Length: 156
Image (cartoon, rainbow, N blue to C red; front, side):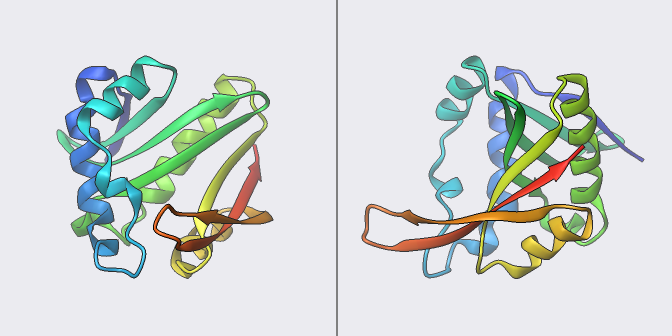
């Protein structure tokens, strides 16, 4: 049974650990995720400055998390992470369902995220639960590499 709790700044190391486990599969890609460079200190500062995180537990074992910000009229999430041994078991969908409750509790009627266009399985995951692509953009990395992303939204 998956249950959740909101993170506080003392959870920065746990958040980073879950994120690194989940994003390791992208480490050797042509353009590795910047998630791998985020330090515990950077996450802690972000949490102290308005960023929030929701941590998913199976009993007492942390199995995933998502970071987010409540902005203007939307909830924007990023770094959705599920540990490798629990991927494909519905944990990400449960996290996103819980995030919908958070959005409603904060009187936000839309949830938004950015997804690498090349990571089709993530785009399909979000589409399978009602997210729709509403825009595209190119992220320019300092190394001169461009990453195409789609912006996805779900009304809640």
